[in-house]
Length: 449
Ligand SMILES: Cc1cc2nc3c(=O)[nH]c(=O)nc-3n(C[C@H](O)[C@H](O)[C@H](O)COP(=O)(O)OP(=O)(O)OC[C@H]3O[C@@H](n4cnc5c(N)ncnc54)[C@H](O)[C@@H]3O)c2cc1C
Image (cartoon, rainbow, N blue to C red; front, top):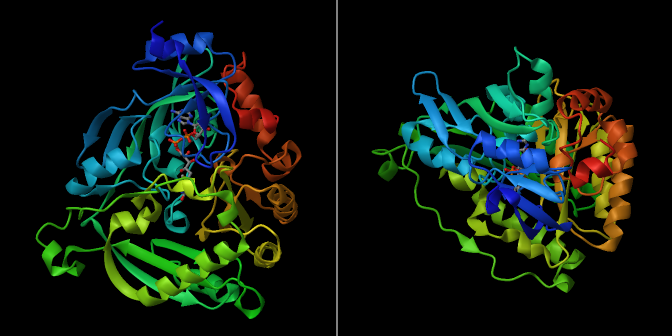
């Protein structure tokens, strides 16, 4: 075994910088190297680019796909891409946008791997129109806990496929996949920004825009009274070449250069309080008031606004932060209001809050999306926060909703079982794929999976 396979020990965390653990990190360049690592591994987990916020990709031993990132083939007629799981969305955008192809689903950062995107069955701003990432995977190969390689798809070995997609790395290591890319005519988006005075108005605006491919709203969760839920709704479509600024029309698939700033230091904890959060939210609302209406913008700032600031997670101070994302089924909008009201009167103030509309979910047991509204909130990690999030779990579970595992670092096993009723079916499939318990994360142990 080489040094990289044996693994070096480093301090690792998810994107929220909490929790931090000492972990052995192995890499592999081919299947036989991975098999050798798995033979030695006794309770570890695959890791992509570490953009899950909490402890999904954390364990005493992690297997990084960093060196397993080759694009294997592409069919320029059908748009089918065959690529290894360590390839990132950023890699795809760089290679394929200039050729007129775009990933079918992108999250709020391009720095995620295909393996991480499949394992969390991620969603984008187009879930209501295009479902989640797994719906666009035509087939994948998984290495299970015993080193067997299984070819599977939605039609063939569906049980394995549905455990790998959304399975948070617990079914095995996804080696490679065939992904359906989508055709685009330009590297630009026609964007529309609308200000909505309260929660009812933004819910209606999402419904009105159901035919628009991309939609997302930022909500001021600190506004109270008749301003509760005031929002900025941003919708968009891939632009046609004749809609672009004149200077861009000659090369519509070229991406204009984007500036990337770096967050210069870790924010001192005392600056993260209700006053700074209120200021931040008011400023955000005002800045967007100036941009409202229709415009044509490059795809990068539309999809990945935070990628423009390198290491922005340092803004939440040395204690790190938690992202809390939940979904509530359609018809449960009163519970959504209740949660927003509870947050607006709590001691914990969220800085960034994002609302999206989901279409129907898929039948993968641990996938997060179900038809309804999903809200994601970033909170600095402070002692009072944990009690508040426990309360929000209760409301979410009582109303048939669930919390997103790839954002989570603290959900209880009890609430998890309530929120994911198919957990037992998943655990049963896992016992077949991984009878020796090769795969475990800090999260799976906490959730009793
Ligand atoms: C700024 C930001 C914005 C985000 N926006 C969104 C969003 O809009 N929508 C959304 O759905 N998510 C979003 N996310 C979450 C992110 O898309 C997921 O956490 C994704 O899983 C991260 O991919 P990764 O490569 O970093 O994987 P990691 O964080 O390293 O791992 C995540 C999970 O995938 C598993 N995994 C990774 N690679 C493999 C593999 N090859 N085989 C098997 N399992 C594997 C890990 O074991 C772990 O359980 C966002 C994250 C950030 C930081």
